[in-house]
Image (cartoon, rainbow, N blue to C red; front, side, top):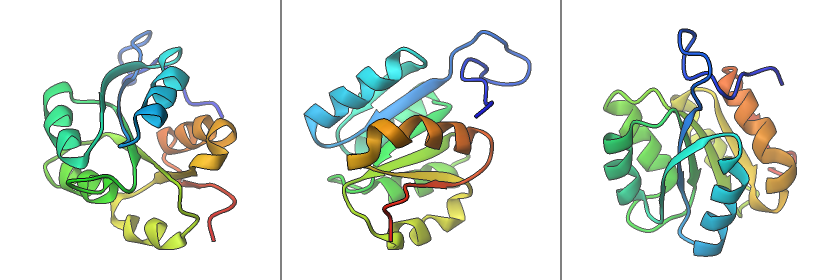
Length: 143
């Protein structure tokens, strides 16, 4: 875990990464924002996939933390749409489901993280470090 959480790009030391967080459960969204705020600049927190698209185009995040199952558009579809429009944001998905199908559905997105919500405290930061370093991450309980 050696990724520099403050570097936006190799030429800009000291700048915190900009993160967009999305989850349709208000309590989980608040928890994610709280967990990330000390290390990152949380630039948007939204509750559905449509808002992910709108806010990502506006705030240009470096990192997306997306719930897999959200209304309007699921997190995987939102990430795929953003990638298709040129977004270079790294992606970590959070989910209640312990299902490898979601991992397979996102293989075209490159190195992404999958964190099961019941392992959020233990796995979120390792997942972020991993995807920032260009490596995938999957919670151990995903089958």
